[in-house]
Length: 238
Image (cartoon, rainbow, N blue to C red; front, side, top):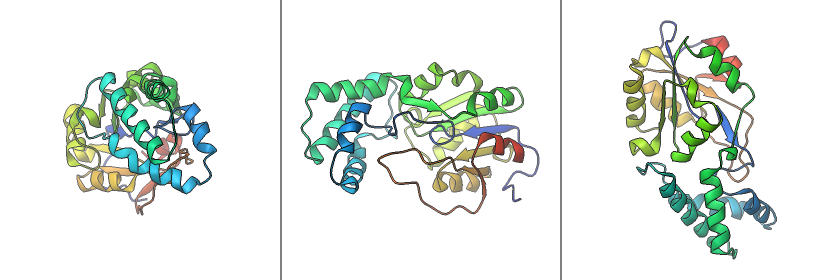
């Protein structure tokens, strides 16, 4: 099996969050559960998906921010734009409650079953890093779910002002971890992010969990490297 750019046993694991460690509990990162029920009754699913994606310009994860309050405001703008585009009337108070729920509720995230045991087993054996295109709520949720304590470094794109596959993200993680690219195994679900990591000299492994998003189509893109479908499979090839 091709192990990419790592010629020896890795010292560092760098993991994405969404799709690798966690998934949205109710099937979406951007709409609260009660609004999901409203959208589920919409007659044209393809229109919901298209409009939901178009409104994502409001949720710019490359925008620098350091507070949940800033994120809450952006999420409110997103929900307002998405519902307006769909011709749905939703009171502003309801939209504000939905944005607040997503931003401040850790239960918006659920961990895959193998996460806690795998991280505990890796702790002390590898340097562990998390690198995610995300807003401040992601790290707050991972802390509340007991995940953050296992990581030596956790970086969200809103802290860097760039999103994967931008090189700034990977370079920030390498610097914080004190690791050379050839020491690192990088795990993500998106081919573009994996290609960027591999180009920098990391060993890249695609995580292919069962798909979990309700309003977004499965992520596409070809990947010719290593693939796993669980953290147990990842452990077996390290």
